[in-house]
Length: 297
Length: 258
Image (cartoon, rainbow over all chains, first blue to last red; front, side, top):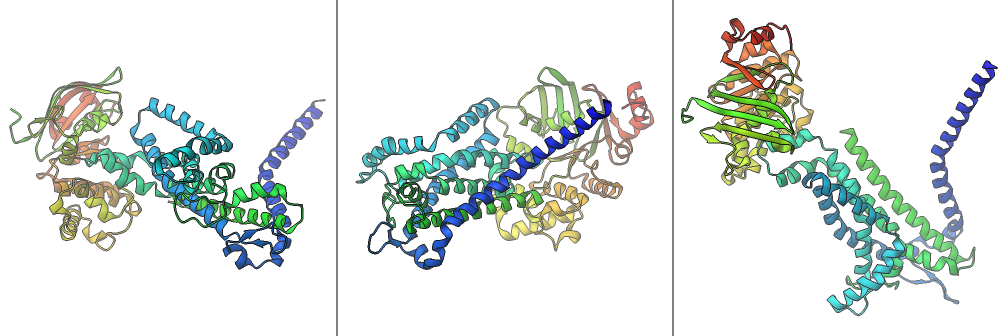
């Protein structure tokens, strides 16, 4: 009796351990599974396509009956430009907010701000797209007298607001991780608060802040719904801030439902997915290496 | 009265509370210029608190209230008109754990000059000279003159602590506060820092908190013994260790508690 209870316990222990182990491995399994699936769908086309034309041509006419063309150059430019512009807006705000939270504000204001910022992160992207269409677009037309309100700038603004929460929370963690002895040393030498920030904290936390920015980039480049709704969805290389654009993500979202499975168009869309996979993978890997860089010190 | 040039720091009826806990109780003391004054007493007696009043760095955390007066160079540092930045320029501080900034040796030393923005002192040549002078003064020049651009956090602890003293010097402080500056160092490092302190006497007023009775005896000229937030005794070091006035002092310096 006693022995069997002991055995039972040993068995359940093993079972639980196995379950936990599976949970741990599942993340890896899923990521590779998704990658494999996307690759399998897109790969057949890799053989048929001129990679240079695919990447650099701005001719995206997949539905042509006679001569379909699959150049994602304009889409890449669209994705990159909206991301870069979004970061140009989000980084000063995000890093500024992180500095304010970790160095300047009182504990009560901090709580309130952090909750609000988390709330900002929780807004679904389709709602952002909605705001882009119905609020930002008329505003841009009114303020800048541009003909089309759904454009590069509109999308970038939304992406900036969406990636600020990430930049703030990771950036604040990076600043908090700077040992207090550094602050104390600088203060004891007569440094003002601002001098402590830009002479001591920013250099000491620069890797963490860079990681925060890169994670923001990852967020922005992968975002789909908001940019689909707010950037105008027109395939071209933008010449001004207020030109409509189209991104890689929005193209997949808009067109995949319309293609027949296994067609060339279908395969190319998966290839775009693969490209996005590659870009976000590189961005995340860089962020990871940069963060590891801090720890090693 | 505090015009007396031989007095660097004078406190009158200094009281301090952390929240509702009174950490300093009516401290009145005069600390002479150009000498080394030791602050001794058991843990929690308020000696570090008192030290951290002299550059008002204990106000970094919000719950501190102070009453009374501290005069440094004849000026009450609690006057509303006093600039904390100027105060901390003339009252430098060395901490328990060496805390060089994570920048180069060179930048650590010129950090003070840079943040106080003395334009004429910011030329390349002037900075180079300030670095050399400061490092020579703390006996580090020969060791570090070829490593000025190494990250300061990579130095040995002893060198780091000397560097922390060196970076105060370009600002020409009146007072150097030391909060157990040797407690993180080995015997050799302790010896080196003590030697350095001796070399700096005369020019600077040094106030040092120490738990090490032998060190207090070796390096200080005067000693203050504190207990439970009160100053029990302040006299020349020799007197304190040979015939202390207060029985509590006697018991402490003999090592019967604390």
